[in-house]
Length: 183
Image 1 (cartoon, rainbow, N blue to C red):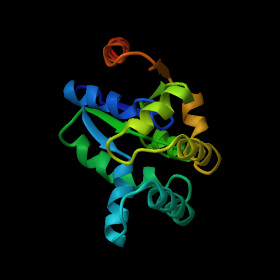
Image 2: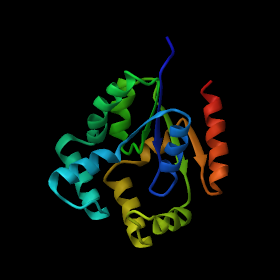
Image 3: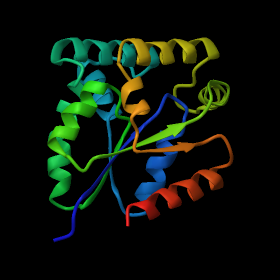
Image 4: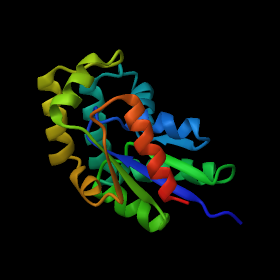
């Protein structure tokens, strides 16, 4: 039986997590996005999906279920995906507690950190077609993710780090190199 590959993509907003997930999708990986839990929750509450509501929902759900909340919510989706896929990517893991929860459930979990400087990330976030952020909003989101969501831990202990400050092609080359390390 083929061993399963579990990769969790981490990084601050605008670092390139979604671009990395798109690359893995094109390589035949199953992609599960942590942010889907937020989107689903907001839709259930009848609230618009925007930065303010997303942040409040993420913070509220973590107060209710603890800092591993999003991992708790995504685990059943991982279990379902395992039935049909042996290569699963988790896009956007945030907290240290999510990491601990998932690492206990999936010991072979690999953490891939995508890094870009604040200047580059804030430029990317301002240019997004969906939910663009101002530089001030970007700084506030960074601070909230680090201080309230404990996102620094998974980034700091990543198994692999890709610096994403160049072209999309350069990111793809780095991701291909990363895939080569899994063989």
